[in-house]
Image (tube, rainbow, N blue to C red; front, side, top):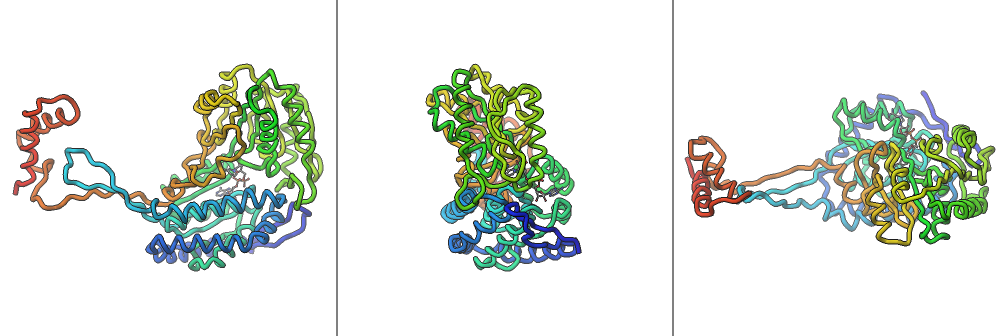
Length: 506
Ligand code: NAD
């Protein structure tokens, strides 16, 4: 039996050894998920809402345990585990409890006048088995929010947590059990990337993947062969643009937070900043000063946690070295050793790898810009399009710049906030992903959208049915002219009447 070890980045201790699921175990899990889905998909929305409420109560009761598990698994500080992992999950639960009935209610849609008497509507039906593949940086919320969306829509779930966050995957299964979820509604499958690929091969009905762009492309390829709809939440290289008229202190604080929250291991982190020339020197110095004040060591009270994968420091140092060799200046920080200090780089330019590649760690390069047009050009000059920020006290300028930024999520004079609002769809453009979840989009993704058109069924025939005869073409044409262009009213009315009579042919 192959196993995976979970080590804590806090002190390197072995937390637990997890057996990697075999193909046979995965097939059995899928069968159980299908059987559970058969019954669960028929449950009414009220029962699903009760399950969400029950899960919320369990999370509130277990908050300290949840935070403790997240912290020891990821090396996060406690306040961040609470604010960025537990809080978004609770907010999402409450949001769906309130809006699920409305989201799942069949809705009527308008029909063209030519189809007078026909009623049309759209219904959402649970799609089946949802496979959720999650990463290690926010192992709780990036698994829980997809799970909540999937079960709210009536699906059953197979969760494949990151191999670097297995205890959180186990925790999630336990919480669902404590909340009284039907057995096998949410099953955690332990394993690595191969396990993820093997699960896809079993043909789930939906895949929501959160992780790197490289793996996302592989998943899309594999899913395409099986025509499984995928929602991909991938990497980012989020720009933050600061104009000289922005509130200086707020922009400095916001930049430091959005770059170094979770030690920079955030898909929407500010990983390249553009500051207007006239304030560049003063601004970068203030950011460096603020960054130096961040504390690290005690997860109960400090600002910075640890790198989930300490080995990544080497790759980050490579980016810093390359930038320095091309003229960048390190204003503060160093990534050597366990107790790293976040790095702020000035005098960078768009040709350095640190301004192009996803960083996913505590490194912030800041470049200057001369005009708004230049800032927008630089911000959009990236294969990624996950998130972007603009800071200015000029509301009109903020709106204008925001409308030009190529990103799925935009924050104005704020940092990382849009992702935390459960009613806002979340997802990326360009290589940052495909599809949206959160809000209604999350329910829609895990549903089959069914269109229904209904006739009264009272007439023996219908206008468009056989036999066509010689009159159909001119009468239809006259009627179309009246409806969609300019027609002779009385001529068209006669034609429309003749068309209507066709309903009564035997
Ligand atoms: P990763 O792509 O290495 O792994 C993510 C998950 O995919 C893991 O569970 C892994 O086991 C699984 N996996 C790997 N290969 C697979 C395969 N061939 N088939 C199926 N599953 C496979 O990502 P990571 O290192 O865990 O996370 C960091 C990345 O995630 C960063 O690029 C970050 O930007 C991105 N991310 C994106 C978002 C978002 O919402 N857009 C959020 C968080 C993280």
